[in-house]
Image (cartoon, rainbow, N blue to C red; front, side, top):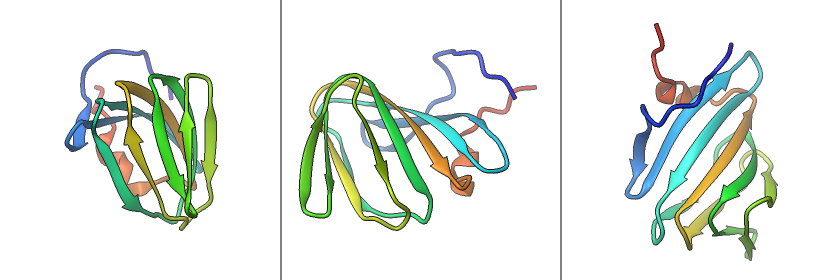
Length: 113
């Protein structure tokens, strides 16, 4: 599976938070998040491990009672079922890998014919 970047087909999942699944396989799924300054990802968890990379902007991640400010080039990994949240401090772009494949994010894959 190949993906060529475009600026279409993002879906807003929360106010100020847009996502698009870029590619996926049998075991992993890669998504891009566009996040607007002032938006928030509320405390949540999911069974999939989540590995992320901040492309641009600034966000504050919360997990296990610890807050960590992230800047471009920073990355993170949350084990499955770990509660985490985020405050978006600047307009930001993040790339996230979910393993195993996050089934619910298949809905965010643009239907390319």
